[in-house]
Amino acid sequence: MSETKQYVSIEMTRRNVLAGGAAAFMGLTLSGLASATPSDVADLVANIAAGQTPQSGKIVLDMPQIAENGNTVPLSVSVESPMTDTDYVKSLHVFAEDNPTPEVASFHFTPMSGLAEVSTRMRMAKTQNIVAVAQMSDGSVFTESVQVKVTIGGCGG
Image 1 (cartoon, helix red, strand yellow):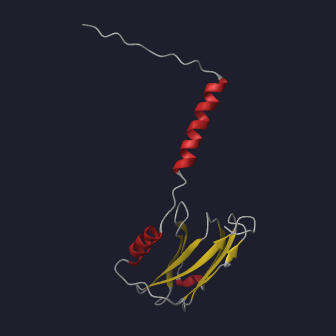
Image 2 (image 1 turned 135 degrees about the vertical axis):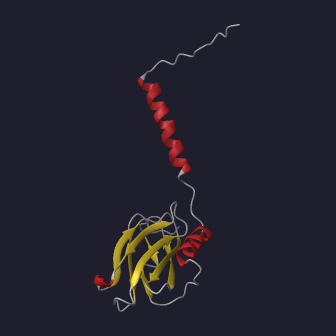
Image 3 (image 1 turned 30 degrees about the vertical axis):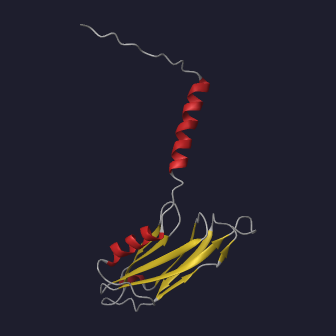
């Protein structure tokens, strides 16, 4: 008994290639619209804390309360530390609670860094909390958060 296989022939035209590419792009774009949640960020912080209870203090998270352009929001973070061989900031992590990817940036320091301070810009999808987490050389963990309102064209959002 032999099977007869039937094949469908699709003509390879410019229109078919563009349509297929557009469909694939839309699939990727729409799948990327999901946002992180505050509990996703809490899980990431708990993973960094490794059983320690994060404390407040030591971190200064400087961001605007209102960002008129979510594509480029200034961010400055500093951590109070003597930065000595026995007492220094090992790493600093920044998370966005409602962005498609919650991990914004991670910075690593040594006592030779002198200061635990960074400035950059980040992209924000919408109004949300930004969370900074500092891991210290003694194993302690500190956290600070600030809410930034992202407006659309300066008219609210």
